[in-house]
Length: 250
Ligand SMILES: *[C@@H]1O[C@H](CO)[C@@H](O)[C@H](O)[C@H]1NC(C)=O
Ligand SMILES: *[C@@H]1O[C@H](CO)[C@@H](O)[C@H](O)[C@H]1NC(C)=O
Image (cartoon, rainbow, N blue to C red):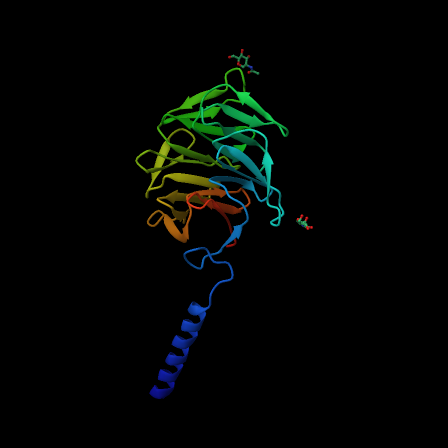
């Protein structure tokens, strides 16, 4: 009887070895993770949904076509950062901190200055500038209202979720009136919804677990920017080689 159990145990070990040694189909340059590389080169990316994916590289703007064989079409204009929402809203900021909203053909300037911007929908637009936080009022004659707090990156989802990170890499979630700290450290953050939050620090990617005791799980891929859509679609880029990756996980 003992011998049979030993045989069974050895067999199980062998199966585990085989399964773990089988390479995944889509492999990044480091480890077998559920990301597939998409042709092209970008330094930063934003995902509103699978239908609204935008990126920038060297001040040039690109939009995903929906066809992986010819994935990108260049959009006229120049931006340092772009943000896309599930409802089709697209805003960006240029390197001189000017603020631009896409009208479907070209860019309309909105008064003010921001270093980073995030759109969750046409009415939910936030940005940061010199550590200060601003929210779009919807009134272009007086477009921004300052929100108390200090952040270097911010992300807004279609469901109204707002998270940010401060210069000391601390992580903050907006409650509607103030900021609650979430354990951990990140330099960049992207929220698709209240339960779908991803971030980047030092080229490493983390996903929010929802658990207070262990809020972040590392995704074993090296990326420098990440975008999460309202529908759960996740894209990332690695600015070291400008490679573009789309998450194929659940
Ligand atoms: C994608 O683009 C390629 C190359 O232009 C084309 O042959 C193919 O039909 C397109 N696929 C779809 C689904 O549009
Ligand atoms: C927009 O703001 C301006 C300046 O404060 C104000 O005069 C105007 O009434 C506002 N418009 C709306 C639609 O609230």
